[in-house]
Amino acid sequence: MSSTSAAPAAKPPMREALVAAAFQLFLERGYEQTTVDDIVALAGVGRRSFFRYFPSKEDVVFPDHERCLADMTAFLATDDEEHEPVRRVCDAARLVLGMYAENPSFSVQRYRLTKQVPGLRAYELSVVWRYERALAGYLRDRFADRPDGTLRADVVAAAVVAAHNNALRSWLRSDGLGDAGAALDHALGHVQKTFGRAAGPASAPTRIGPLPTGRPEDVVVLVSRRDAPLWRVVQELEAARGRT
Amino acid sequence: MSSTSAAPAAKPPMREALVAAAFQLFLERGYEQTTVDDIVALAGVGRRSFFRYFPSKEDVVFPDHERCLADMTAFLATDDEEHEPVRRVCDAARLVLGMYAENPSFSVQRYRLTKQVPGLRAYELSVVWRYERALAGYLRDRFADRPDGTLRADVVAAAVVAAHNNALRSWLRSDGLGDAGAALDHALGHVQKTFGRAAGPASAPTRIGPLPTGRPEDVVVLVSRRDAPLWRVVQELEAARGRT
DNA sequence: GGGACGTATGGCACTCAGTGCAGTCCGAGT
DNA sequence: ACTCGGACTGCACTGAGTGCCATACGTCCC
Image (cartoon, rainbow over all chains, first blue to last red; front, side, top):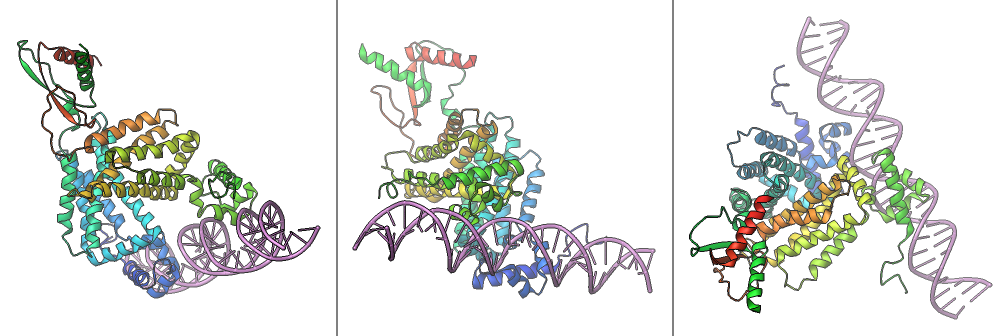
């Protein structure tokens, strides 16, 4: 009972051997030109063992996403409600980028593979989708009381993921040389500026507020939008004045 | 030369027959429990013909997405630069919903399938991804001069897709009974309010005088007096809003 | 009418991913 | 030494997807 149940400290070397053999072959002759038999032959293990460590051939390309997804779920679960929600999901996205930044060369190699193999691109999309649903689930929970809570949660989660991917891909295209963290901070900064803090940025300008009382000759300033009912009323008033 | 080159008017019935046979079997015994041999046996055609019409078993579930994607690409390509970009991609999203709304029952059946078959979900993600890239490509072009153009384009495209999916899924969950268009307009309205015309320089407050034209989402400032007709209209609007 | 031709279809054999099952090997506990 | 459990291997099987060739049908041309 020493190290098997508590922590996965004793990692089987076979898993790493399979990943290494797979990437060697993928890089030298391409993903689709490499069969699972080739991989297990190079790694010197039985074919059946491959599928015990990786449910599919595609999984060997993303060996650590499952762990990262679990980390993110745990990160969002341990929330003391003290954090601003948008800020919180941005931090969760930083967690993912951290995983990529752990092995820059590996991430760059994988990026080149996924860029040109449709099957791998589809697989990556389903992984990203699970990240996005985790973020959206957290936000739906935090926005439960707001009017369009689930809609807003979905949109914010999608925006965070898009910003993350934008920064990540530009870093990967630079062969992992640039500052990934800075690029991500910049991208997420935009998202936080648009969504962070307060309810809808749209409701603020249209809101007129509690009607104050005062002298009839007081001058009042109204803020409206051209698509708000108030503006249409103004147009009618103006049209009526033009006719007289 | 009559109808083969101009328009795809003479659609082969085999394609429809395969789709019908496939869905019949998918619904009565499940997607993974149905083999391609089962489908072609029911349709009474050869196995090889199936793969001539559908590159993979998954494609038979989404028979019209390829056409819809082409429509969207064409819609975005024929842009006279007169439209507001965010508004334009929202309209493109409405195009996609239109395809779903053409066959409500078919869309609902497909939704139930994709919801519970991981392989189909992954396929759908890759389709949605292509829509999103089409939108983002258009926006990247329109935002080319802005400072963070590509980032903004990616985020807006993701937000539009998320809003579209939110509305679409809630409509599908209602078994296609609700008003899909209204739900989508509501969702996209949020996105347009957050992103539409936000980066432009704040315009100076407009005096009422001669009514200026402008974009619907512009913020306008009105100056009035408490004894003027405008203020009384505002009071009525507020009272009406308080009642609802 | 008959032959040449392009196209749509069917049949067959093949590769390869993925699974189920049975057997083997090895280390730990008693 | 015996056993028990887990890791590993081999083998046979299903099913998706592909390449190749044969066949049928309509068309055009002579």
